[in-house]
Image (cartoon, rainbow, N blue to C red; front, side, top):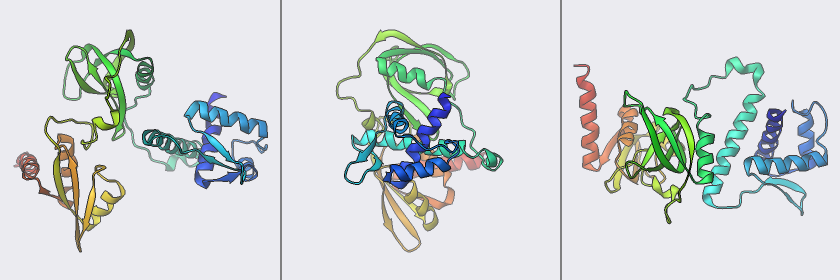
Amino acid sequence: MARNLINKYIWIIDTIQRHGRITRDELNRLWVKSSLSDGEPLARRTFYNYRQGILDTFNVAVECDQGTFEYYIDTSGSEQDGRLRNWLLDAASMSGMLSDSHDVSDRIVLEDVPSARGNLPVVIQAMKESCRLCFSYRAYNRVNTKRNIVVEPYFVRIFKQLWYVIGYNIKDAMIKTYSLDRMSDVTIRNEHFEVPAGFSAADYFKDCFGIMQSKGEPKDVVLKASSNQAKYFRALPLHHSQSEEVHDSYSLFHYHLLITYDFIQEILSHGSQVEVIAPPELKAMVVNELRTALANYG
């Protein structure tokens, strides 16, 4: 019953989002045609209750323009609120579409990625209560599991379909990043903490390509991309600082960011379609990685 109710919330969010603005009569007409309605209209009182449920569940407000009597999704609030809301709406829209596609499920191929469903709710609850986390951790580059790690969880982030928690490691006295799928035995301690004054989750990775940090200073990076590769960079920028110079057969992409290992790996993943123009040290790092890789086939 609860799952069916969530699907109804998702359907309403997705339908209003796709239309931008929609009257209740038009929404009701579409509702009757959906598989969730059982052919029954959406009663006014039921719709009011669903709007409240959507607000409580997704923190998404369905508002009514009293001038046109059209319903719309309220997009006011901070930039970070907007990003989270858009992410939730995209996820809700995708979930709703897939849940209504059982008849063609054998023709929908999904990527198998590590799940964070088990640990993410616990981490978020610890953040809400400002309590420390204790867990075991087996890093990708380690054989043994490290136990009884105590962290003050500052924020969570998703990158390349993996969830991470970033927080202050009590023993090491420094901020560290942990992948949720590598964590086990996660518990919340009854030990409270406060996020340092002035700390900004949005700013923590602002100079980074991905999830890795560096003690160096951000560099001005220039990448030369083929005209075909440039289309992908325009559609999915590597970093928020990205700008482009368009030429006849290629583009130059400019960035201001830290040179980290995951950024180098990203460059290498595009093969001959991308060339490092600047800075010289990044070019040397990429060349060294290529030579090392080539030696494996020597």
